[in-house]
Length: 355
Ligand code: NAD
Ligand code: IPM
Ligand code: MN
Image (cartoon, rainbow, N blue to C red; front, top):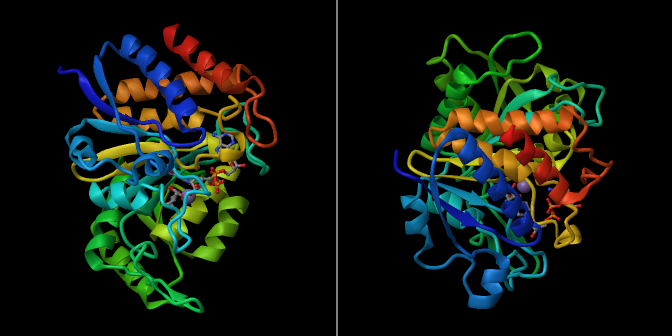
C-alpha cells in the first residue's frame, strides 16, 4: 500500500515532548508492522497564535482533510487569551467543526500495574465514553451574548447531530472487544433531561436510534448520577454517549479512575477525517521538564492506527504499553507522573515493540 500520509501538530506545553515520544513509537510500530509513512508538521496552537496571530495556519484545514490521519498534541496556554477572556490558542472549534469530527471517542481502561484510585483492579474498568463533538454547550463558543454584567451561551442539541453520534456509539458497542462485568453489551445515555429541554431531545433521539440496535441493551443516567457511578461502579459500563460539555467533564473524571490524564488517549472521528490527541491539556506546570506521562499520546496514536486500517499495529502498540506496565517498567506516582520521566516510558514501549 501507499505510505500512510500523517500530519503532526506538536502543540503547546508538554505537547512537543509527548508527540516526539509517540513518533518514536510510530517508527517501531511501522518496522514491526511493515508499513511506511510520511510525516508533515503543522505548527498550531497558542504559541502559533502568539507568533502569527492565527492558531491554525490558513491552508492547514485542507492539508488535514487530505491526510490519512492527524496526530495532535495538546494545545492552549492559559496566558494566551482573547479580550473576552476565552483562550486564543485552542483548536477545538477550528478542528472539530472544520473537519466535522462529530464523535470524540475516549476509551477508559485500567491497565495492569496501574493504581486507579478506586478499589478496582486491572481489566475491571474498560469502557468507552463517546462525546458529541460539534454542538451542545460548545455551539456558541466565541459567539455568546455578553455585557460586563451578564453573559449567556446556548446549549444546542439537534436531531441530526444527536442521531449521528448515537449511531456511532451503538456501532462501537457492536464491534468493540472489551466487555462490562455482566457481559451485556450496552450503551448508556448520559444527560440532564430531567431539567433541560435540549437534553430531553437528546434522550428522545437516543431512544429512537436505540430501536435500530435491538441486540444492544440501553441504560439512561442523569449526568450527576453518572459522575457518581463512574467512580462507584465503573466495571458496569460498556459505551457511554453524551453531550459535548458533559463529556468533557466526565472524561477527566474517568481518567482519574484509570491512573490519571496521562493514561487517556482519544480519537476525534468524522466520516472523512480523524485526528487523535490526548484527553488532557498542555500541562504548563510540568512542560519542558520530561515529567509527563506520554502514554496518553501513545494510546492516541494506537487509535489513529486503528482508524487508518492498521488495527494489528494499533493492537501491537497497546500490547507494548500493557506489558511495559505489567512488567513494572513504568511506574506512576500519585500525580500520574512516571517515576523515570517521559523518556523512560518511551523506551519501555519501544523496546517491547522491537521484541
Ligand atoms: P491539563 O490537562 O493540561 O492539566 C491538568 C493537570 O494534569 C496538571 O496538573 C498537569 O500537570 C496534569 N497532567 C496533564 N497531562 C499529564 C500527563 N500526560 N502526565 C502527567 N500529568 C499530566 O489541564 P489544564 O491545566 O486545565 O489546562 C492547560 C491548558 O491545556 C489550557 O490552556 C487548556 O485550555 C488546554 N487544554 C487543551 C486540550 C487539548 O488540546 N485537547 C485539552 C484540555 C486542556
Ligand atoms: C478537551 C479539552 C477541550 C474541550 C478544550 C481545550 C477546548 O478540554 O479536549 O477535553 O473542552 O473540549
Ligand atoms: Mn477536556
